[in-house]
Image (tube, rainbow, N blue to C red; front, side):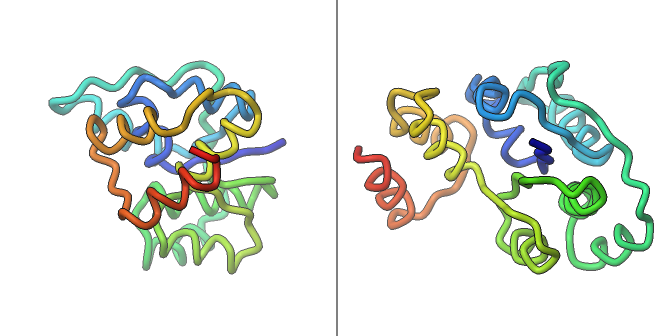
Amino acid sequence: MIVVSNTSPLLNLALVGKLDLLEQLFEKVLVPDAVVSEMAAFASGARAVPTLPAWIERRRVTNRALLDSLSLDLDAGEAEAIALAVELEANLILLDEKLARRVATRLGLNCVGLLGILVEAKRRGSLVSVKPLLDALVTQAGFWVGHDLYARVLSEVSE
């Protein structure tokens, strides 16, 4: 399975010490150069973020025309992640931002965000409970989740 990620799922899971959850679900995750740069920039700030582990593999985007087109509306990490996913015919792209998900879906990509990752992790037995991790994402990582969505995610996993 080919899985490409944008910065947000990686960064938020890293901030709560659960980046390994992606390895449990997908074994290997591919990221473009811009995502590596965004992670490094964040790590050089006030909050410590671990370096990317070996199971997260860096890949360079080669389709410059697609990348240039995507860069008109999306930030560098989103644009490169989507372009890379298209190039590699990825099975899944990890994206949280609404506009980026719409663009990726229009290009025929299957998207899942961080909350979908948590739901899948519980279904596969990689998480016993979603609520403590969801709460940590909100309080420690600053991940924004609306009240209705928060309740819907917990309802979906019977918590």
